[in-house]
Image 1: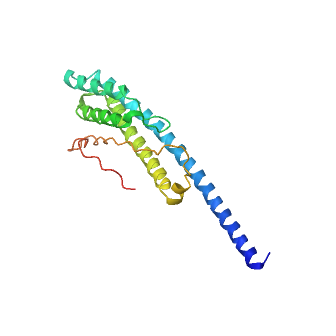
Image 2: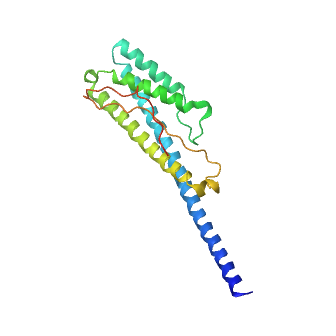
Length: 194
């Protein structure tokens, strides 16, 4: 073999080895990000279920018109399944659950918290904060996963495998207690630019 051919072969081997190593690191990173997203989705489901449970306890002690609205919103939220653990969204369940959770946020915003037992009011505030944090953690994990999946070489080599592309879960954050502005659940949802 001549010297130029040997150098060319060595260069090709080096490029293939570097590309293989890069692909392996991306696959591992994608796997970790998908696992993180799955865990965040499970945490979000727990937070949403916890808020529904507290909303039902609140509905049991508030005035009838507010209690009925709160009960209906809680029932609607539990009638639609929480985000699936594997990230799949059969028949648009995620969007329907988002709508139900926003209705529950509006119903909870109408509750006079000063009239509640302090322990129940604190439990409600904790449940709402837990939903806000769980949603943010979930959406951060989704964003990080989608950013890596959108890289050109990751798409070309199909490094994400058969994992479904994760989707954001968008619900309105309740306004803090004492805020002059109500919950902003009527705003138009803006898609995140990637």
